[in-house]
Length: 136
Image (cartoon, rainbow, N blue to C red):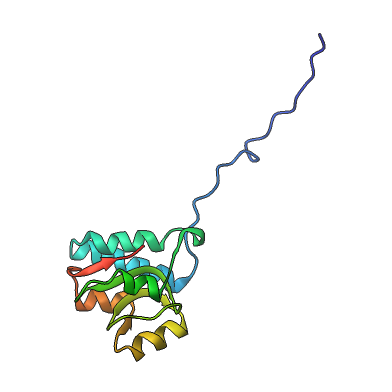
């Protein structure tokens, strides 16, 4: 039996993957604002939205207008922690809060008489988060 010396890996080479966070300054400020609002108003909805926004790009939420309007019930505000795209037609007046909107989605929603607002405005208008539906 012959013994062979196997070199050990140094501690530098064996590292766990770092937990990465978003680097987009606009996204970071939105996450911080939602976390502060969640703690201030004791509303877990804002903290949940902030946690979805803090996830990786692969798991970030992207919805089409058709999907958003399909899940709408009367008088609700839709919150999408990600991006809303312009595929599909809005059925009625929509109020959608999202991190980003495609230009085509903005035009379609405003043409139907709805509103596209950022999360900061939604928190100002409705600090407790009542009548807000989170789509993911």
